[in-house]
Image (cartoon, rainbow over all chains, first blue to last red; front, side):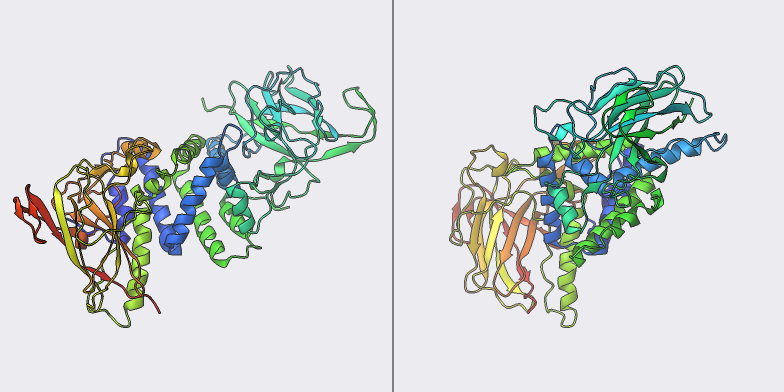
Length: 298
Length: 298
């Protein structure tokens, strides 16, 4: 029988997939095996480091529950999530090459671990601040396609942390939803709502990923941002953020999610009459952003 | 602020370690990030595949407990554990190059997930079969260093599954230890004990790794083997197996652990007087193997 020498191991694992019935799985696993073995050989991984890796993955698994996803956090903080977002968007851009759009589509960024299905569907113009802390902000703009045609009745999910940087999901098992809503654009593709100007915050760093970041000499912070997800029939779904232009950490987002085109000026206004006629008794901000959706591949 | 383009992401993650205080961690994480990103780009990983990976890792984490280690199983079945073993042993061989040993050191193989600390310390010649199923086998040989000098009082841990391929650890929370012991070589470096001839068996395949193997078109089986771990002051610890020469799956071990030099002929004998004078009322096997330990690096 054939001796398996160490330099043959990756190929031996790949060859063992001769009976695999899923071509794409075979392609992905072959590349994974090749790269994992190349990594192990390149760094000459020691048994102690190997065991440390096993213990790290095990601890990360133990940390996961309905409201905490340590493996997404790991992927996010190593830039892998953003790489997948970038690949997906590049595919869309390549599909448009034959017929370049008039307007550049809005750039995507990470979903993050804090989306919570089932937020209330509200009328345009609603204020979703509730009892949350933070400076009020008025968000408005238009959703069009890349030809500039308004997208009416586009579903717009929005969510963010509070003025102290905490999401509802981080506030204990019984904490109610906060700072989340689903809106629908009007006949002209316009949207508007009130919320707060989101603060920068640390990703959850009390688990193995937090320990990894500290050992890497990294901070866990993300610049302030409003999460958005836009869905409309005939258009590709868009998951992105609006980043607050004067937030700390814009140039060192812990999850590498910042795109220049997503940085929005949150105009400061003194107390008084807001653009929608509301009379504000305290200072507020106005954030204007127009989204451009890519038409679905036929 | 600098836009982060997708092709810069791996480097951006690496650059973020500027303040890392652990040079080796920085080296390992840099290589890991580089290879993970190269993998993601090479296969153009889709968001669905990314989410499938997150779910796989999460399920693997949930499966782990004191007696089950799904991440070691993942490492084993992708050949990674054996790669780490090979690197460690190659380092030992490189250290010996200036002064090549008279005898080749015994090859190492994987520890596996079934070592259980605290097995009984027994006198040489003891029978550890207990109530376990399987054909009796007499194991004997000598432990020397690579110059041929006997290693007296060498600690020899042995463990295996039963005649049906099951380890004690797989038999429920309250199952007692079985088919495990710790021996010590005599003044001449000799060892001897009775156990069974181990059967081939599947690695635990009722979890995510089992599902992965099925999708890869692979069987989960390991050829029959007796686990051994040898420790003696002044020598490198050796973790290895003795493989049963006529076992199925020697050429397709699910964890890629077989080395030709570890395949042992289990001589069949009819009932009668065994080499140690014991009178056997049923057929039995005799396995002879001499171990060669590498002297510790001073």
